[in-house]
Length: 500
Image (cartoon, rainbow, N blue to C red; front, side, top):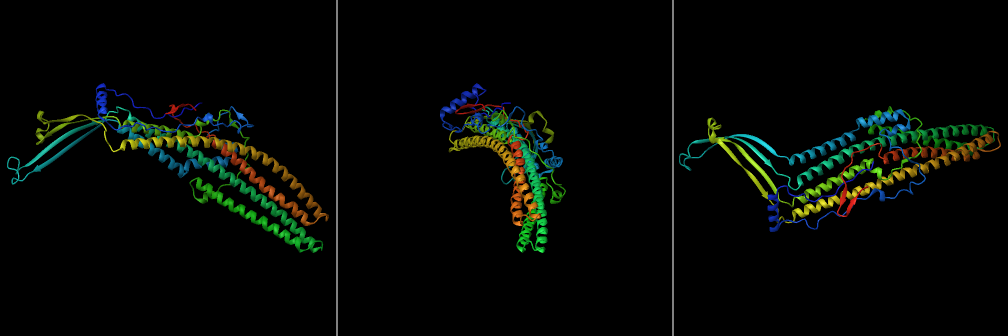
C-alpha cells in the first residue's frame, strides 16, 4: 500500500449566493482586514528522498508482510504471551490513552454541533406593578402579567467553509489521539517484552555466578587439602576465598535485579508487587534472524502509529489555517423568534397573541487591531510546527529501523565470537583444573583460567539479551503489526505537492 498524506490549507470556496457575494465584494472595496502575505513556510518531507539502501545493504529484504499484531509470540514463551495480554487488558496507562481519545472525539462533536442550526423552546410567566405615584392609571397601581411561549431559531451558514474547517481540525486531532492510543498499546507490549528479556538475562547471570561459586568452592576444598598436606600455603586458600566472595556477591546482585524486574513487570500489568512474585523464570528465548520488508521506506508511513498520528496533526493544522482564513470573510447569521404572548392565559392562543421577530444579519471585519492577522499567523506557525514534527518523526522512524537492524546483525556476529571464546576458555579451565589435581600445576593457573571464563559467560548472557532486545526494537520500529487509518488527502504546500 502506498499511504497518501495530508493536504495543506486550501483557499476559500466561492460564495454560494450571488447576491451575498456581490455585497461582500462591495464591502471589501470599502476596506477590510487582509490576510495578504501570510502563509505556511514548511514542506513535508518525501519519504523516498530519505536514502537508506546502503545502510540496509546486506540485509535480507523480504516480500513478507510487516510484523503481526501479536509479534511477541515469535519468542515462543506462553508466560510472556499471557503477561502482554494481561497488560493490554488492565494497564492504567492504556485506560488514560483511551480516555484522551474519547475526550478528543467529544471535542470534535462539539465543533460539529457549532455549525448546525439550533432551535429552542421556552415558556415564561412574568409580572410587573408600577406604583401609582410614578405612573398614573391605567399603567400604575395594578399588577400586570404576561405569558409568553417562544421558539428561537439561529443558524450561521458556512459560506466560506470556516466552520467545516474547524470541525475537520478537531476531527483530525481526534484521529491523532485514537492512533496515539494504538501506539500506547505497542509501547506497552514492547516494554513488557524488554523487561521480561531483562528478567531472563538476570536469571542467566545468576546461573553464571552460581557456577562460578561452585568452581570456587571446589578449588577452595582442593586448596585446603593441599595446604594440609604441605603442598600449598595460605595464599592459595585466601585466593580461593576471594573468588568465592566475588561469585557470591554477583549472585546476590542478580537476585536483586530479578526482584526489581518482577516489580517492574507487575507495575506494567497495573498490579501490585505481589503479582511479580508469581512470575516464573522465563523459558529459553530465541530471536529470529533480522528481516525487513522490501517496501521500505515508503510503506513504513502506513504502519508506524507515530508517523500516522503526526500526519493527522498536519491535516488538523491545515484545517485550522482554513478556519482562520475564513474569519476574514463576511459572515451571515440567520435568526428567528416566533411565539405567543398575552397578558391573560385565556388570550394566549388567540389570533392576536402571535409574536414574531427575525431576519438575516451580515457582518464583515474591517479594522480589528490586527487580531485576525495574528490569529492566522499563529495558525500558520502551528501548521509549520506540525509539518516539522512529521518530518522529524519520519526521520526518527527510519533511524530506529536501521538501528535495530544493524544492532541485530552486529550482535549476531559478537555472539558467535564470544561463544567460540567461551568454549576455548572452558577447555582451558578444564585443562588447568586437571593439571592442578594431578599436581602438575598450581592454583594460580586455575584461577587465571577461571577468571576469563566467568567474564565471558556473563558477557555472553548480556549479548543474548541485547539480541532479543534488538528483535523487539525491530518489530516495534516496523510498526508492531498496527495498520492505523491515515489521512486520504494529498499533502500540498505553497511550494507544491508531495506524494510519499
